[in-house]
Amino acid sequence: ILFFATIVIVIIWRLFQIQIENEIHPRHIFRDNNQEEYIDKNGIKVVVGHYVGNPVHKIPNASYDMINKVNFNPKPEKGKNGVPVIVEPKDLLVMQQLFQINRFNLLASDQIPLNRSLPDFRRKKCSTLYKDFVTYPRTSIIIVFHNEAWSTLLRTVWSVINSSPKELVEEIILVDDASEREYLKKSLEDYIQNLPLKTRILRSAERIGLIKARLKGAREAKGEVLTFLDAHCECTIGWLESLLSVIKADRKTVVCPVIDIINDETFAYVKSFELHWGAFNWNLQFRWFTLGGREIKLRKNDATQPFNSPTMAGGLFAMDKKFFYELGSYDEDMNVWGGENLEMSFRVWQCGGKIQIAPCSRVGHVFRKSSPYSFPGGINKTLFSNLARVALVWLDDWGNFYFKFNELARNVKDAQNVTARKELRRRLQCKSFEWYLDNIWPQHFFPKDDRFFGRIRNVGENMCLIKPDRKVMSNQPMGLAKIEKCLVRIMACSGYNRQKWEYDNKTKELRHISNHKCLDVSESKKFTEGLVINDCNGKKSQQWSFDSVLWK
Ligand code: LR7
Ligand code: MN
Image (tube, rainbow, N blue to C red; front, side, top):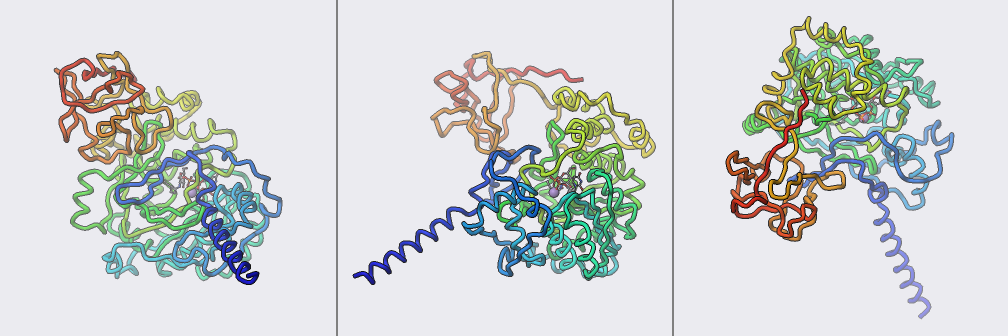
């Protein structure tokens, strides 16, 4: 009896352990609402945007050794082929301490080999292209970093080495933006001596920020093309050929890979949604949106062809070096982080270039929910000044629109001297922002003659439409009405008819495009209880008026 009892206890104990292990998959630990993400219609998790903020978890600070020494401890099977790393229960506290240092799961990253293998995520046809790659221009690969982790930085480097044809890489240039970590000094210098691709480090004694750090790298680069990467990326097979082939065909095209997601909690490599391009919102924050109709049509013929994108994310792109300088490289008065990606995007399009995404090029990037480093001078002297500069130089009238709704940028606007950048714009004879909106991003939602910006008012109730209280994420009902089949919800924009409404100027009805029903206030007549769609009946509750906001 004792014998069997022991066995039963052992089995139960084991099951219990397995249960615990499953439950404390790291994914479940750092859950906060700081990130905008949603599941698209193909079931793929899409992350849009990132925030500068503080994590809420109260855990002991990491020790000096944890921060300054390399804790790299690879296990061959961990993270193989991009699978998630599952942290053992005994390591959870350390994991949380380490997480604070870089705002990603450093413990998980440190368990994955520097040269982990990743599958070929491309469409089949991609591997048949680029056979003539030896004729493409050679590139310098520039990676800027400030206090990056050993494992993520070197995994970026090793992924370049392992997934690029060596004929195409002139050199790898690491630009250290005044990092304080001990391991990034002599240990790093020693380490790169033995790499199979020529790799150098440039150091900045002072914190100059990523924009000036990239300029420092670019100045030293010997390659005909500059390829920039963040310091926590993983390139996959074929990524470089497909970028360089675009530049070979047209040296005025700035080309980006499809940016896949390396999960910040598990380091799983997650394929991102290909049918996205880059644009921005009213706050000049970079955002992904579903491709425009013209691009979708073009892709039906050949989904391996590079397609236009109104803006780029900023960290991962290749550009002809001469063109980079002809076009004014970067705005040297931008500090630390932010805005440079939109500045370059507008400049490229308005001044005669193109921005494209090459679907056969896939690079993973660790998306974080918050920023791990300081912003010297504060966010007003950095991010918001940078954004003010973008608006002042490139947005024409829409700059006023931006400043009207962005107090922090408005406050620093007058302190900016943008004479040199305006002069550059004049010298290059760049087109207007209106041209950009009309031609490059016709799907934009900025106010224009045919586009309304303001409040939508219900005539019957004399009250305005509002978004739900919580930060709007996908699938939120507008209010809490129980009439489920007719409930109006806020969703990520998809471009499909079910999200389109038409306004009848005479009847003041807002009619749904696909079922011709009218937007109405729920029967209980309380706005907070939600909006519904009903058969059109001419009643006041179905009449809507528009209050334009003046911004010019
Ligand atoms: O002061 C600094 N000095 C630096 O060298 C601050 C940062 N850096 C380095 C840093 O170590 C990293 O390698 O600069 C790189 C980018 O910084 P991140 O990783 O904190 O930026 P991010 O990934 O959150 O932000 C995106 O937007 C930035 C705006 O300035 C830059 O353009 C980043 O390159 C850009 N990243 C990407 O485009 C990757 C895809 C993200 C998306 C969408
Ligand atoms: Mn990054």
